[in-house]
Amino acid sequence: MIKKSAVLASMLLAGCAVGPDFQRPAAPAVSHYTAAPATSTVATAGVPGGASQRFERGGDIPAQWWQLFHSPALDALVKQALARNPDLKAAQAALLAARENALAGRGAYYPSVGVGLSANRQQDPPGALAPVPSSNASLYNLLTAQVSVSYMPDVFGLNRRTVEALQAQAQVARYEMIAADMALGANVAVTAIQVASLREQLKATQELAGLSAHVLSIMRYQLAKGYIGRLDVAAQETQLAQVNASLPALRTQLAQQQHRLSVLAGRFPGEGPAAAFELSDLQLPQELPLSLPSALVAQRPDVLQAQANLHAASAQVGVAIANRLPNLTLSADAGSTALAIRNLFTSGTGFWGLGAGLAAPIFQGGSLRHQERAAKAAYTQAAEQYRSTVLAAFEDVADTLTALQQDAQALQAAAAADKAARVTLDLSQRQWKDGYAGYLAVLAAEQAALQARVSLVQAQASRYADTVALFQALGGGWWHRADLAQDDHPATAAHTTSTKASHDP
Image (cartoon, rainbow, N blue to C red; front, side, top):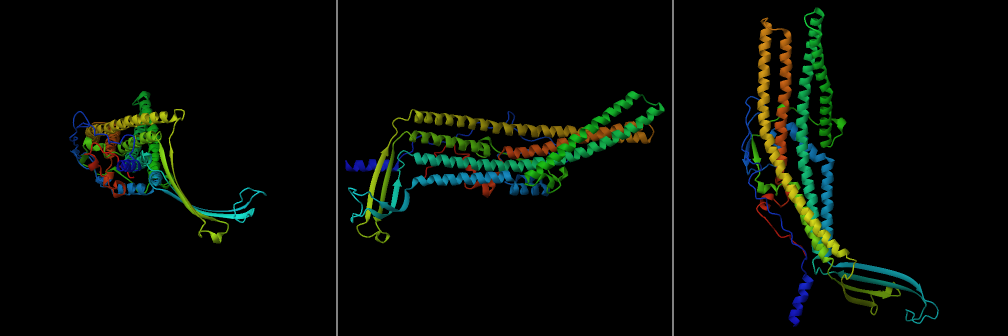
């Protein structure tokens, strides 16, 4: 009987954590992101950014994926942003705070030890029945020094579930920081691409405005001579006005993107970007890694953040259940008390005490029961939010794959239009030189060629920008960076469909 009692007591002291043990959600049972599996895109020969892109199924993403564009200017911009961006630094500080809170919560695993020293000058009323000093003095000093120890055995796992929730919240902050890091690199790359594209569009539009103005001056001369009617001149004036009206919008967009690029890099808008950037500086990556769908949920920071939120909600269910159960408190204190400091710790002044207390909630107006129900509802909410995040992640990849394929076809069409416009311009110039066509036909052909050039620049920029979007949609390769990955490579987690949450007693 004594042996059984000892075993029961040890089990109570060791405790068991009430509530559900967290299990990582299984990877979705899908094999493709789109209805028709992506393999490659069409190629457009002789055009920068026109190479065919092949999707390497199951390929891995490098940590510095932006280096695949082979642009020193882009490398410099991304590195400066990662080093100076204040939003990223704020996310890093939030992660540090969450980790420290988790470490602080672990203190509940250990006994609490405190020391105290008190000194009192006291006077008892005349005729007191029991004066403290043996000398019966009514005015005296009382000095006490003691050490107190208290400990709450984690019988039902309240402390462990609380720390588990704090650790999960630290993981939430961690994946928020990783997501901010990945988004920052992608935003810098896309913004730089937009700056280069807008700069070329603005240049072509300014040339188009100059040609339109030249055509208008010729037409006004012809009108004065009676060769053409006022309607033709009015049509050209309208075209010139429309071209000129597009210039302020382009200048505004270019300035805004330049300001955005400066701010992303931790600089003030007026300081300007650190380096000039042109589309010609880029090389389109031809081999694009395409992570398996089963690996995506173990790579995307937003999915992992939603999973950590789910873990924290699971632990909070255990906390709510444990709050409805009894708590055991063990305490001890020892010390010395004397009338003079020189007599402290001498023989006959010591005291000690041991205690144990058991407290259990009986009636709390139903609050504990409703808190438990609320925790379970919050877990259901977190589970649905996790599923929504996974679906959005797959949608993001599917949309990007579709965009890349359509971008390639759009570039092919834009390149064909550009080529046709240049042929038309060449023929018009020859006919004009030989006297078979008027100069207005040449200018019209030049206008068409410049418009085709703007469309071609836009198509090239879309291919580069959506290539960046694919790297971000697949997770950004953060697991290859020692400062982010730590020891949880997602390749290992991707093959684990469920795991019990670890507890550190």
